[in-house]
Length: 158
Image (cartoon, rainbow, N blue to C red; front, side):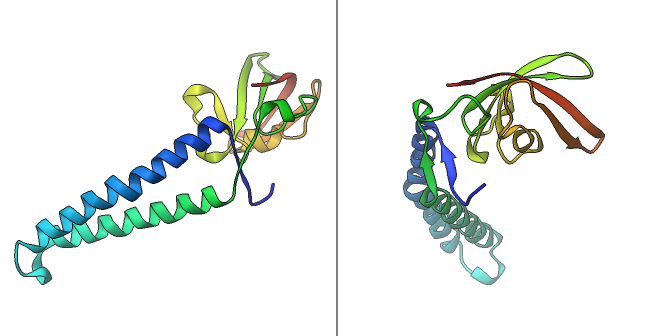
């Protein structure tokens, strides 16, 4: 895939809100913690100050990473996509060739992946193995316990 992060409108809005929250409230909370720790005296032996500065560094790192994701984000509209092959945003029903068990996943970007909601990342082993497949194709997924084969049963878009 490319360097772009493909997001749904909902995912883009959620990440935008998260970034704004970190930039405003998050930075204010960290600054307050640093100021409080600074008031407690000698900074060379102040563990609270060190912890607050570490928290500030982590927050800024998260903000930087999220800004990179947002800079390369492309919002996808399901109506613009083709449902003849598996692409980002596809809902794919797959059947385990060995057990005959069926399951449906939606392929999304890493930042939107949530296994509880059956949303898997296109960069995960299963997600990348399904990309470009058509109904009836067999996708062989390499796992630590050996290869799994899944038949593409159905493809739909959100």
